[in-house]
Structure formats: structure tokens, C-alpha cells
Amino acid sequence: MIKNIGLVLVLLIGMGAGFWFGQQNNLHGGLEGPAVKERKLLYYRHPMNPQVTSPEPAKDEMGMDYIAIYDEPLPTEAVAVKSGKILYYRHPMGAADTSLVPKKDEMGMDYLPVYEGEQNIPGQIQITSEKVQKLGVTMAVISKRNLSRDIRALGSIQIDESHIKTVSAKYEGWIQHLVVSSVGQAVKAGQVLFNVYSPELITAQQEYVIAIQSQKALQQGSPQVLNTADQLAKNALQRLRYWDLGANQIKNLQDSQKPLDSVPFISPYSGVVLDKTAQEGLRFMPGELLFRLADLSTVWLLADVFEQDLEAVRVGQSVQVHINAYPDKNFTGKVSFIYPTLATETRTVKVRVELANKEGLLKPGLYGTLILTSANNEKLQTAVPDSAVIDTGTRHIVLLSRGEGRFEPRVVKLGGLANGYYAVLAGLEEGDEVVTHANFLIDAESNLKAALDGMNAPESAPDSEE
Image 1 (cartoon, rainbow, N blue to C red):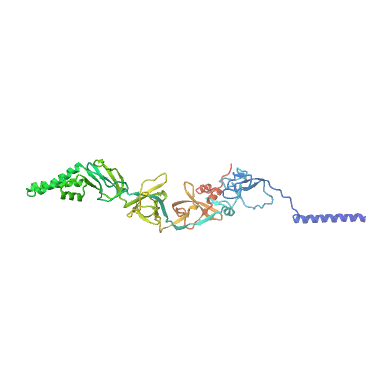
Image 2: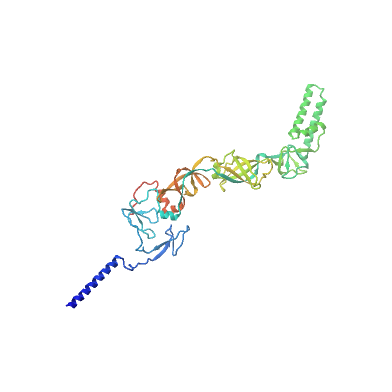
């Protein structure tokens, strides 16, 4: 009896000890814990485009790691517990697609619930602070700046067309001796170009000599006869002047009263010979081109100005010209003409600048650079960095920071570009903060087009899926 009672006590003590150790094990989670089920790796996907996948680890064009996709999540992963009323479910990649009931996207990913109080404000983009940091987003504050800038345009020295002269005779003749015989030779007004033999010119000289001799012989005649002789002498003299005989030639003819068989042909202009047809022995007719001269004391610089710089160019504006052949010299000129047509191949307009060339350094054909300063020398304008502007092709957009990872797409009207900044005509004010770097990544991540389309749409609940 006593032996049976002892056996029962031993059994009771053993059961109690086992129960106590079991409770301690439950309280402390056991020594080894439950077995963790290992997840199966399916593939890696592009961080910005879920349709691009890779069977092995890779990086995208921005250096971001591809995201690993598993068959199911780990049971030990920490999951943020959200509470509140679920308003709707949104596309996991930010596409403009929502649903009132749970669903999956084209990649089999679950739509994400949007709880009351965390839905996006219409017309704004919401991005987590972690993603903002990962994208490397930088911002700048809008301020007023001096947007004056130096405009440069390439061009070349050309002959002033208004200083090109042609030399021709007004009578028929033959060239006997050619004095100016080469193209490029400098000529001064009054210089002999060639000697000419012309029967018409000889006859005209003879008529003038006879007229002045008769004028002297009839000094004692009646007034009517004397008046007739004077008129004949004047007419003969005028004919010689019409045929471009110089004052010295006529004076010699008056003094010698002997007509010349070979008459020097005098240049009426100064300049450089551009072209000539005159040759010794050549017979020429009235009006036939013999020489073409150009006065190079003033030349043109014809520069090609891009269409976006035309606003800063005006007639009469003083400009600086840098000639490649003379790197240590500065030339100053004035804009004399802006051509009315645009070259569609280069999107440029020719601008003419007049330059003084008294020293003869500016030779036609030399390359030069036109340098002018835009008119905004003292005026401060609201300016936005050009890196902040997204050009959609139809409008210009910037991402305005609203704080806490919220960005508002803002359509802006821009003016000229100067030193990396656009003049803001409408859409932004001084003190606004805009995204200057990674704005195109925000565009891709948050579907900027959907946000822009929602700017003019009335606030309403998300469309339900039928």
C-alpha cells in the first residue's frame, strides 16, 4: 500500500515538473524557435519598370539595383499595421488606375490599399521620403536674377556692296597701253588705268580746239557772232566732260590746242580691282564693263544669329567683333541691317555689321565672331533653372515642392534663356521651391501625365471597377 502511494507521488511530481518546464519554454519562446520557411527567388525586376526583368541581379541605367521578387513573403518580415477605413486600392507602380475592390496588376502584384487620410491631394504627386532620397532629388528656390548674357554668332568679312563701282567708257575705242593690269591691285581716283585710241574722242578734241580758236578770232565781231562762237565752245567742252576727260586733260588741251591720238583713261573711283576685262588691244563699246572696283575702307561682317537670340539684336546696336586672324585686336561696329528671311537648314538669320577698315586689316573672307550683350543689363527677372523644366512638346512644366514628399506639377510660361536660367513670364513666384534634379525620375515613378490630367478635373471618388 505504502509502495503504491510512493509511486503515485513520483508520477505526480514528474508531471508537475514537465508542466512547469513547458510553461517556461512557452514564455521564453523556446531555445531554437519555430523553423523558418525559406522563400523561393523567382526573378529580379527593373526598379522603375516592372515589365523589365532579369534572372540574375542587375542594375538599371541610373545605377539602381533590380528588385528581388519571391514566391511569398517571409513570416518574420515586419509589416506596418495601418488602421482606418480603406477608401480604394491603387496600382502598385503608380499608374492612373484604381479599384474599389482588391485586384492584381498585369504582373500579378496586388493593388495597394489607400486608407482614409492618406490619399493624394488632387493635382499633386506623393512620394515617400525614402524614395526621394534614393532618387537623389535636389531642389532650388525661385529668385530674381539679371538675365543679361553675351550672344555670340559666327560670320565672315564681306565687301560693302554699296562701295562696289564699275568702270566703263561712254565712247567706242581701243586700249593701247594697259597700266592697271591685275586683279587685287589698289587704285586711286585720278589714276590712269590705260591709254585709249578713239576716233570719236579725237574728233571731239578737234571740235573743241576749233571752237576756242574761233572764239578768239571773233572777239571783234558782232555780239551775235561772238555769242554763237561762245556757245559752240561751251558745247564742245561739255561733250568732253561727258566723256569723262579730266580737268587737267582739258586744261592741257586748251593750252596746247593739239588733240591727242592716245588719251589717258582716268579712274573715277578709288578701290581694289575685283574684276577686269580690259586687255591691251581690246576694242570696247560704250557701256562695256572694263573694271570693277571695291572701296574697302568700310566692310561688312555677315553673322548667322540663332533664332532664339534674335530678340536681343536691334539695328544701330554697338557690337564687338573678334577676328580669328588678329586674336590680340578688338574691333567695334554697329548693326546696320537684320535680314528678313531665316535659313531653315540652320535656323539662323543673317545680321549685317558695318566695320571701319582704314588700316586695311579686315580682308574679305576672314572669319570672325560677333559678340553682343542682351538688353537686360540692369533688369531683374524671375528666373528658373533650365534643369527644372520638363518640355512635353506642347508646354513647359516644373515640379513645385509642397513638402513631405508632395510635388505639384505646374505649367509655366517661359521667356529667354540666359546662363542656364529661363525668364519666368507666368506660373511661378519668387520663393517657390522647384525640383532641379531627378524630376524626370519623379515623372516616371508617379505618372506625371495622370497628375496633370487631374489638375483640371473635379475632385471625385475613384472610379469603381465593374
